[in-house]
Length: 377
Image (cartoon, rainbow, N blue to C red; front, side):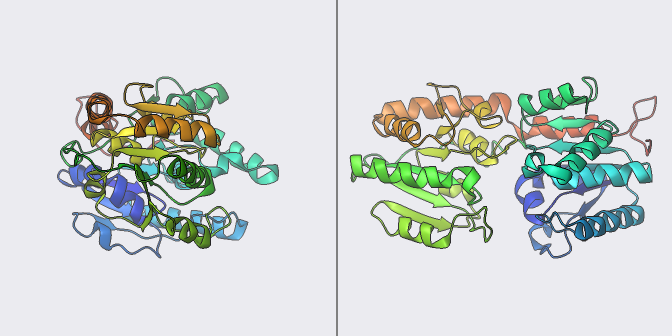
């Protein structure tokens, strides 16, 4: 069977869906549809075919959007898969439209509703109209948190029978494992995310400064991520100024997250972005780290308050600083106990094997339960 996976970047598929691609490629012919400008090398180790199409992931210009949709339709017509799995808000919508026109089954994964859901005016009206029509025509819709699914159900965009919540992208529990903490060192905090304002980077920078001033020498703060050269991103000068202060380190892009997590005690994500379930948090849980995040859909899925971390109100620096201070004041036994709770939660809810199994189960099948090619509107 030919199976297609569509995303807004090679980086997304490589970082979040590599295990799924590997599992499917053992039994099926897998094509990855990604933007033409992306470097395909991160997926070179996998037995998948690359099928590039035109896409500007951040554009809202009508000409570029029409070009992207037509390019995707042409690429899918050439690949002609039996089923299409899609990710990311824009590529979900375009995949749904293209699959409906080509009579291909489409299974989108709603990993957060994205900034498109916040559009106003004519663009917002058009997005909601198209999303409402085409999500109803999906073969099945996966969600990463309960709140997003409930919103889609209430809007009439999906049905109970053809939608469900799965545990984010899942995590490789064999790759992310707890390691013994080096005794006696300062309590070390990490924020690893796209360096967007809405991810809570300004709040993390400010809270870390306040806590460092309150507990000098007892805490350290790391920031990992790639600079975003848009108005939504954090200016490079702001990051450099922060990194020049005592106890603050900017790491930039990190390839080996398990190794980095081995060196920290707590992962912080003060996001108010429309998240699915943040991968950085489920990886932190699997690695046995304490978690501080916001009481936002998706983020709060990874926290049992008081057991493995705390949720704070979004854009609330005093609350964020207080939660981080509570962790900094824990002794070795307290850090270990909360870390064990994180690992137990990851094993119970976020094993990537559970996600891959659900993807298998929505493949087209004949009456005997055998996988087959099927297309329908």
